[in-house]
Amino acid sequence: MKETPQTLWQNAMSFAFAIDKIARDEDDATVGRYSAAAHLLSGFALELVGKAFLLHVEDPTRSRHDLIQLYERVTAHGLDVPADIRVAVEALAPSHKDLAFRYMPPGYKTTVPDLGVFAPSLVSFVREMAIVMAGEERQVVSWLWADRT
Image 1 (spheres, one colour):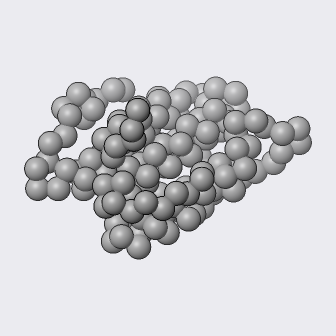
Image 2 (cartoon, rainbow, N blue to C red):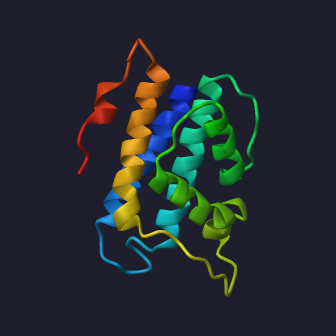
Image 3 (cartoon, one colour):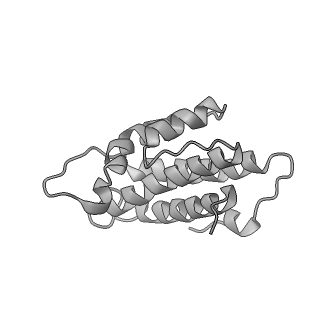
């Protein structure tokens, strides 16, 4: 199946909703806002929404899980990335690129953003990207905008 901006965005939105739900859970490292699973999904949500935008502006650059490179390309195309999203990109980038949240090598240590703070911003950012990519047509699938809390 060919990737389109819409399919990438839909997956990013699905991840963002899941992250938002996880972030509301306890501060337990295995299930809550500090869990590796939640940060894995956060990295993928950021990656997918960035790639969706690049496909939308017809930029063929591939990032290979490199969030820093990806968001440099995104901003080079004029997208104003909010400060809290830039902070999350910088915090998640090394572990996302190394696939550390997926494979969790023994003894791996990293600093991660508090998803309790970051998750609502991520959901808003992904939603706003739908408007950016829809342009003047504003053809946004309504069910994706439903409150899923």
